[in-house]
Image 1 (cartoon, rainbow, N blue to C red):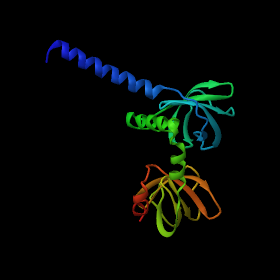
Image 2: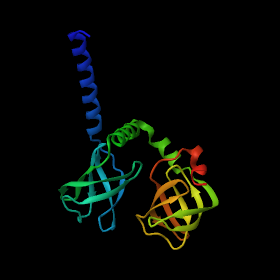
Image 3: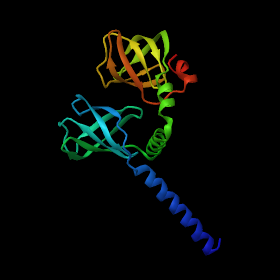
Image 4: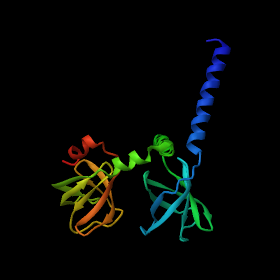
Length: 206
């Protein structure tokens, strides 16, 4: 390979890397609702002021401190963990822990949303399949608890179960790992920790 060709290829690669990095760090205004858990497992609510694939500025009530570790649930984007890197008068900034693959996927989703994909996203996310199916929930200590799947979507499920695991508990339902997001009168709502295609929803929890 000649020096000129090698230099040209290196320039193209460097530009591709810079473009990808700009895309991941590009901040966009997208007022998404969030919930977040502190290290004491207290749940709070807030709203995104601006966001990139690597972090976000969040409007929320005081109560977090610099360096706090948080778990954040962002509407339309899912679950993130990260560290508070700046305190604002009416909120805070968080840097996500995401690995490169997750960061790239978040950048893809943000790009898709700002280009008009939100309506289709909401339709697919909201499409819940009613069930009345027996299952076993496996808790973090390895204990098994019988439950019934009331409905399921691409991102989560509603389970009838007693007693109800506390919000934030991670468990397994069939082959799916999930996290308890809310309580309802019959049991709990869980969010899957890896997305399911509509085709594989039922088989993954059998």
